[in-house]
Image (cartoon, rainbow, N blue to C red; front, side, top):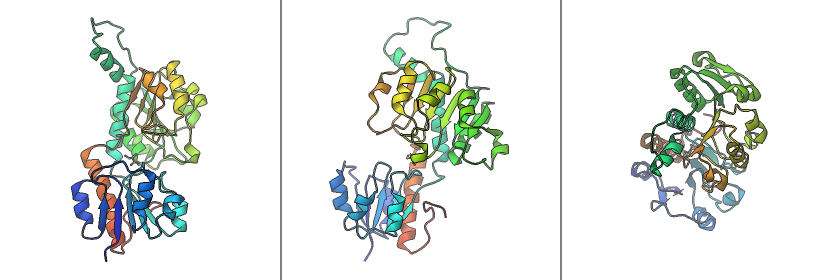
Length: 319
Ligand code: DGY
């Protein structure tokens, strides 16, 4: 008998085709919004689980899933999964590193450019019929070319952001727990968080969320930034204190922000919605078709490897 797999969200047809020979699948192809109780009921008889970042895999869920042996998340981030609780039950966990690096770095740049050059703000103004004449001082933004970028978290996505910064002839500062092995190749200089905040014109957050990075950027850190700077968060909600950021943006320091992730998303801090100087996107950092198909396929490949008794291609915690 094939192992039973639950897929919590709608996935691409080719992913279902790839999994079908190996699993008895229950998939949410209608993309219904399941309550927590429904999710717990559905997982009760499953051996394998394919989740996304909005599915909390914690002790409560594991207790409701006595047969569960593998959790594959269709994301690089895994802060929604209680790894210790999984390990205690002998449940293996996989994620989808690498395949989304370039798409996510592109998105950091889309938000950086939008925030620095006031793209969203001026577009709303134009759509509202306010554009009557051109003026020298209309929507003056911040320079990007030859400015200083500060990248917080120089992993694979951070490096991809830095490579793009070279094309803009930027000075590249970064802050990371350890020196990046590709530091020389990227022409990047490692500095402390405080130095980075004081010197960067554009600060990009690319760190994973954990208790150690919770509110890494709060009121104190925002006050250290240049008044003309921009802050970009493509990492995770919770790395930035959104309430403190809204207050800082209202006061004009930093000048602007670009946010793809939020505390308690999809609910947003309402103060952010009121502000003109923040570009907001709904967690679409990796949202290109090729990138999302690769993510879902990699999650599926981990599940197939599990079903065939092979080592997982991308287990959380290293290959
Ligand atoms: C990830 O992979 O962790 C992204 O945030 C989901 O798109």
